[in-house]
Length: 383
Ligand code: PMP
Ligand code: GLN
Image 1 (cartoon, protein in one colour):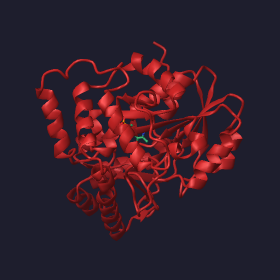
Image 2 (cartoon, protein in one colour; image 1 turned 30 degrees about the vertical axis):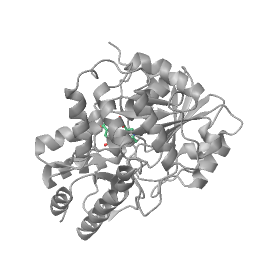
Image 3 (cartoon, protein in one colour; image 1 turned 30 degrees about the horizontal axis):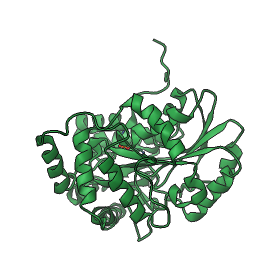
C-alpha cells in the first residue's frame, strides 16, 4: 500500500514515552499529568458507570446538559463575549484531537492552503495533508515565539482557506496578546479565510494574566473554530473529551463530519463532566488551576535554574523550553535520547514540532508533575 503519509513515523510523544519506559527515565516528555483528576470527577464517573441508563449513544453533538454547562462556564469566564449557544455552537468531541481533525475535514478541500505557525503541534500538518490541503508553514521567531504577522501576511494567498493558531502555545508557551488578535483580525478582514484556534491550555493562567480567546474578538468570533480539552483542564488526558465552539453555520459543518468520525463521545464520561461543571458555578476548579500550575512552574524553574539550565521565558501552557549547549553540541534528537538513556529524564526535542526537522537546539519539559517528580528529575539533571 502506498502510504498517504510516507514521511511520517510514530508520533514523538509515543516514541519518547516508549524510550522512558525502556530506560526507566522520568517521563517529562509526553504532556500528561502524573496526578489524577479531582476525586469528585472520578466519583461522578463511577456513579454513572454503575447507574443504569447512561450506557448507550449520547446525542451526536454531545449531551445537552454538558453543552449547557460548558456554555455557562464560557459565558462566565469570557464575560466580554456572548456565551455560546449550547444547541447551535458547541460540539463535544473525542478530545481536541478529534475536533482538530473534524474541522480540517469539514473545511479543507484538495489544493486549499492552510497556514500553520511552527513549531506546531505534531498533527496539524499531517491532518491538513490527509484532506488534500497544502500546509503553508510560517516560523514563529525564537526566543519568544510570538507571530511575525508580516510573515503570516506574506503566506496568505488566494488559496488560503484556514489559519491555525494555538494559544497558549505548545511547545513554547507563547500567549497571544490583544495586539496579536487584532493583527490576525486585520489580516483576514475582507477575505473568507477561517481561523482554527486551539486553546486547550486556556485555563492555565500565570502571573495573573488570563489568555484571551479568539471568541473574545468579535470579528474573529464570527469565523473561528475554538477548541478546548477536558484532558488539560481536569487532569484527564486519558478521557479523550473536548469540544469545539463555533458560530452556527460553522458548527453545522463540524457536526456533518463529527457524526461520521465518532458519531458521539462516551456517555458516562460526558455525564461525569456535566456533573462537576454544573456543581461549580464559581469555576473554582478552573480558576484554581492558576495557583496550582504557577506553583509547579515556579518551583520547576527555580530547581532547573539552580541546576545550571538556561530556560526560555515561557508565559503559558504546561511546558518549559531549555537550551542545552552548555552540555552538548548534539542535535536535539540526539541530546534528548542521551538525556533519557544517560541522565534518566525523558524530554521532547523541539525539532519534532517542525515539518522539515529544523532543529532550534531546544528541549521541552512537561512540568504537569508532582513536586517530588520535578525534584527527582532536577536531581538527575544536575551536572
Ligand atoms: N492541541 C494541543 C496544542 C495539545 O497540546 C494537545 C494535547 N496535548 C491537543 C491539541 C490534543 O488534545 P486532546 O488530548 O484533548 O485530544
Ligand atoms: N499534547 C501532548 C504533548 O504535547 C501529547 C499528546 C499525545 O501524546 N498525542 O505532549
